[in-house]
Length: 578
Image 1: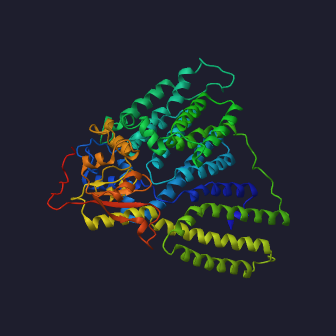
Image 2 (image 1 turned 90 degrees about the horizontal axis):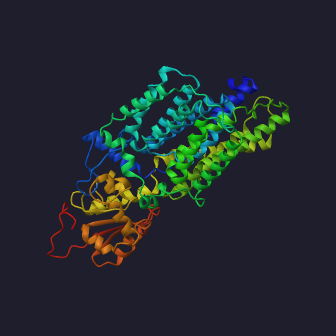
Image 3 (image 1 turned 135 degrees about the vertical axis):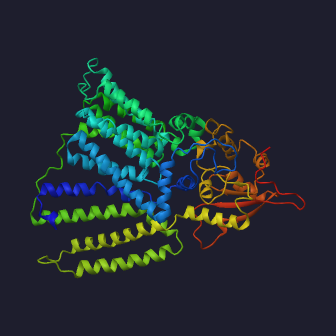
């Protein structure tokens, strides 16, 4: 191979570039539940245009802003062409693009290829595990990375052609993920502060304030970016979406991603450990004011809400490239003795084997729950093991003596690699068990009634799948849609939380809405899930726990049906709640 003919320094460079993309195989490959309402959104825009009244819930007249419409359309087109397998593949591709963009940003601030690649490898693993999923954040984070790259490039070398790039990013961001649009202006603040304080601030712990930005250039970008924000189907409403949809303490407490990070969760541990490392690293180095402000801002947001962790991992770590730009830890002269070569081979094989085990752990646990999954992948494991061990121990390379340890590790790596590939492909095509349970429940419901006739209750997490299938449920995971501050009608989300937490009598709730069917979850609708089983006014239509041999045990779902006493007319679908 040509790479083996390169000198040690170039070999190391290419190996690091390849290795920094390792993180994408660690992503959790279960579909994000929000994907189903996003697909419904994208399908609606393609077929009907932009809605201004919510067409997806049972509640009539809710004011609506589809703040992620362009992301939703892209997801829908991908799904229409290749199903969930193509969406999985696209998410992997976006992971590669994100890591490459992060590497380029680090390279810009550090001019150190080794450091940029190593940091990209580490942070690539973190963001892939916690954030790389089928949500609009994969687009908004890339656009905000692009903004930082432009801001840094101009700060180092002012070039006029860079200025229009940020307004273009603004127009894309307002349509891809309007809730994140104001973050574009937040990221301008550290660079504007340097311009305003240049020549007026001198602190011993700061680098001298040197920037290519001028007040005129900042103002030009600010005004054009603001104007380009109007290039969306909802005008100023999309631009101010954040003010109407977030910030309520009750909502923040009820929605996991809006909570503050906790040491009790893996994400909280990762964030707080990294936060401590950054504090120690930045305390020992002089940085430009813009980096200090950027780190402070991203840290504050991440410590307030877990959903801001993505930007913290991507942007608050960027100044590490500046602080450690002189690092040369990987500039080593290779020992080419036979013993050293053999040790490096063994070491690389162990690392690869460990990486493969880490990369497939999520798939391995998932396929065990699949009907016949254990037998299928157990058989594949035996087949791959026979194939790999046969090749490793029977193949005789030119001039290569038999080395038992090398051949054994090579066989293990080959076995796990083939199994990893089959698991990743199989899991990407196979629908996760939670979604299979919900879609099986939808089939049962459709056999009993139709979306036109039913008044359907679903919970916060279960509603998305039913929206995708054409039903109009009581609530779904679009939290802000059910807040009066946005829908201009009712605080439905608070009502749902009251019922869920036992603060509102469930009988009063049911009498208000006259549901014909209720899809309840043991994980989130504990009161309805449990009490309706003994309620004389309802009958149990289906219970996922009683279904054998279908692999539907990942989510506890019960469907209840309202009993219709003889002589009592059914409640019309569009009847207003009392």
